[in-house]
Amino acid sequence: MKIAINGFGRIGRAVFRILDREPDIEVVAINDLSEPAALRYLLSYDTVMGNFGRELRYEDGCLITKHNRTKLLSEKVLRHCPGPRLASMPSSSRPACSARRHSSISIWRPAPNA
Image (tube, rainbow, N blue to C red; front, side, top):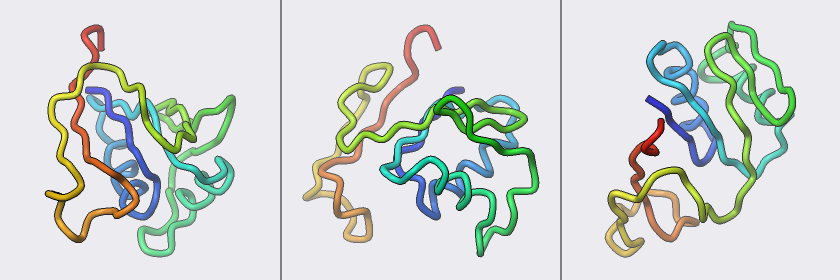
């Protein structure tokens, strides 16, 4: 299964750590507005989760681990994702605890050739 992560804050980094250990899941992209060097550093030395503990480097616009080569994107508005959208939830119906800066939450299915 191919996964993309939009937002690489504490939750996004925790999800990446978990998914990076799964052999049948490939994290293909991470979208975050921060500098790639800062994202790599925060993933490597998390104060709550501890050190990443595995090889991690940034090269040619990608975070590279033993299991994944993950493209880093820096898009304010995601307009293009592979595959059609399955569902969209307007911001007025989201739970109050969700991120306020996003206008909707979208669920995408894998691209046909994934």
